[in-house]
Length: 220
Length: 246
Image (tube, rainbow over all chains, first blue to last red; front, side):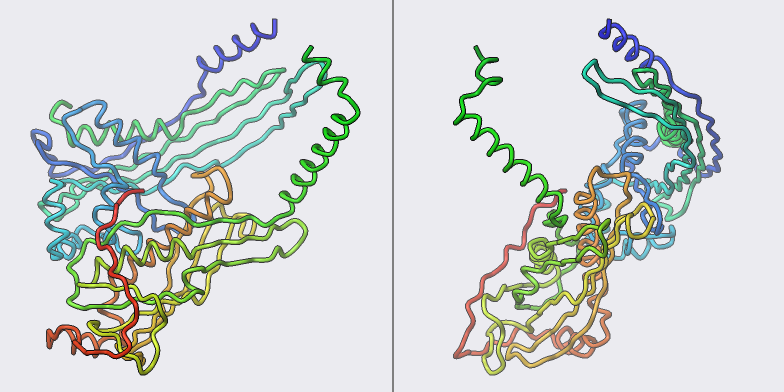
């Protein structure tokens, strides 16, 4: 009987997810007409703010979304890129404006490395996903007869990310995308807790990935 | 058979069982009371930059190479922290400096006035003056932070002071990234060390007390002083190529 309850709970958990509201604003100019060809793209997170950091997992998610939908686009891994170009992309030294690319390329070894990597577009993502509110209570107990939980919990997550696309050849910003997503997750528990999770960050990741694909891919 | 062995142990076995349980309980209690200890570990990439035509000798004193920071708990609810950065410091500077200078030699004895080290332009001695950390329990902000203040001494090959300057470094990591306080403090420390490397590498030519000395050495293009020292320190050439990964 308990086994059936667990299986049912697992099934319900897998099949339920809470709603997410997402908004995307984009301003793209000078888009490549036939994709980016043999050039590579690097996606980097901004880590300048004092109270948050763009999650490395989000950067990875956007990169995977792009390569999963258009395998011809080569996205360089963020950490590999930062290590290859150390110390010029640390929070202290990273270029903040497209004009700073010129200064960066004056360093001979940096210019050679970027040329070797074939980096045409540098995409900066700044933002984070935060838990904005939570309510409810959940109590769990263990006894000789078994274990169980009872209660109800709910929480809100909000994502906000700004994406800036720089063109290395033109030394200019060629596009900007803003995305926000919010959703409320629930966790009712009667013996077994059933999480109904709102995939807020994943939705924001997919939104950004889709917009970037429209910019970078010849197939979109 | 197995059940009877466990449930009804012989008196000697029972005593051993209780003794072992008591030791485990004591160990658990003592562990819970001990300070949080972080041995900072990370890998640091070599810098991508033109090397300066300087031959530098490098000396780490014990306070630097064995550096650790201890913070006593302020109250009953707080916890003490030991953050050991010495090993990671040595890793960082042993990787960074050979990428910045033509040649770097690691001294195995402290530089002394009156004894000249042959074949080097200067001796660099780093010191850690201060380390501060903040965890969410202190600040109510969901970020772990490490702040470091270094002091560098540049000495002539004969040990005379040439310049002295300070430098700060900062690293942080949000709570959401990692599972434990120790992991988060380690990552914040690694970020701070990378920042120290970035600050040193990008600002070295702009350090005010070094300007005239650097101008003399770089404009003249003179090689290292080839002195026939009578008291040469034992020294080891550092490997300049290091793995880059994390």
